[in-house]
Image 1 (spheres, rainbow, N blue to C red):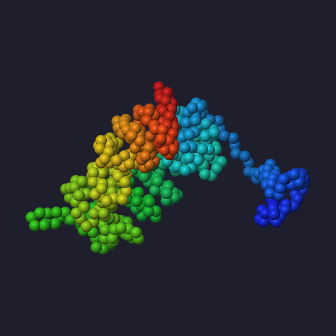
Image 2: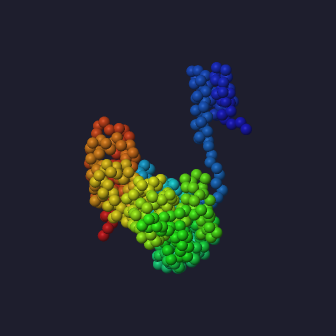
Image 3: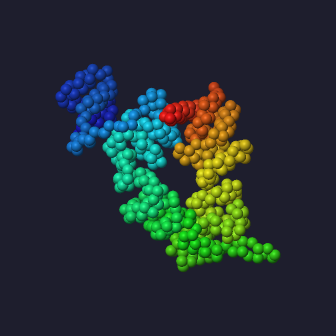
Amino acid sequence: MSNVWTPLLPVAMVGTARQSVSASWSGQVGEMISQTLDRASDAPTGVLRVAGILCICGLAGAQGLVETAPLPKAAPDDVLPAVQDGTLLALIDWAFRDGPARLHHEVCVALSVAGYRLPVRLLPLSLDLGRRSVALRSALLPILGNRGLWLAAQRDDWRYATGVSTEGTGEAIWTDGNIEQRRAFLASERAEHPQAARERLMQALAELSANERADLVTVLAHELTLDDEPLLDALRADRSKEVRVEALNLLLRLPGAAHPQRAMARMAMQVIKERVLLHQRWVVEAPTAMGDDWKVDNLDAPRPPHESLGDRAWWLYQMARQVPLPWWTEHTGMEANELLKWAQGTDWHEALVRAWRDVLMATADPAWCEAFLSQWPQTKLRDDPASVLALLPRERREQHWMRHLRDASEAPLQVLVPQMLGACAAGDTLSAPLSKALAHVLQQRAASQTLSNDQHLRWYLPDLVCVLDHSVLRQIDQWPRHVDEAASFSTTMHAVTQIVATRLALQQLTTSMTP
């Protein structure tokens, strides 16, 4: 079917030298086009003017689709006041558009603590942020207000916010809430009534997707006891690998449960003491074949095609992956750091270290964390120690960084800063002493211009400013600048300045609400 652009196609294909524009349009539009062609200084100009007329007239005469569905009910009135301060609004607008994700979270939490909601004009932007970041949603929902929740219901990709009103309580949250709200409700019930929460989860498992089951099972980590063993044991046979892994990780925290007991007995047959001349030493041997009882304990997984471990090492890794870490010290009499050194002298170093690391991530044993961190280069693990650092209590974690900050040559900032960021969850900040020491080092580098030339460290700078303690933020504003600094560094420092201003304004907002 032809349209208004059809007469122009021959001219566009072959050019005005070979094809002229014919006056093929009727009505007043056709008359205007004829007059335009007559007045044009040359043929190409006439074609361009005709195209302009058709475009403008097309936009003016466009009609939208006819909506037959009834209009949604009007949004209910908001109870919470909206932010009115113009300076703060401009900072929040910048933070949501150009700031790092950590700053998004801090904005949401600060507004919620102060009892404010977002203004209407920022609702679409904030809902888009929540669409892209699941981690932001729990902090974002309380400041959307009733209009924000109403708006979220009008688009499919914003419906994550409409499971239930943020003021909903009790069973309504569990039956109608989104996954974040249901997890929070289950965690709250678990803290007060562990048995009731476990039974609620058991009854809902058949209706949940694999992702939801894996997500909600983690709630059992709170108030975990042997009473949870039957449920966890049943989940080891779940059709989802993620659910099976979560169940096994929780069972590792219950050394008295039947499954860990079987795993420890199985491993005891592989870790034995042998006599060499007048001395005795511990040796470990990988299994030479799969056991008949392995399948029941999820030990029959085939070795992945690109796995660096051989078959025997892969079997040993699976076995050790199911053994609680305290068993190794009790069985051998060696401490965690001694065991890591011992593993280096065996033929199965990688299998043992990888298994211990996996168990550590599930159980967060402080002694093993310290041992891994002290010997990380020797462990030959492929990942970064930040994941292990995150398991330590904050005080011990920061002691580790302070030691290295005193000697930047031992662990340069390019290594320490990613560790700090990796260990700080959304909303976490570094302590005032560590922040002060870090800001001092950064200020020295800014003065010597090594900071502006360090592209790797500069990449992390906006995120780092988000986790520094508020007491050092004004110090950052006083960093020396240089007239010959690169444009990319100037852009980074502009972002840093905006982050500092936003965080200070949010601090003032929440402080003013404190009685």
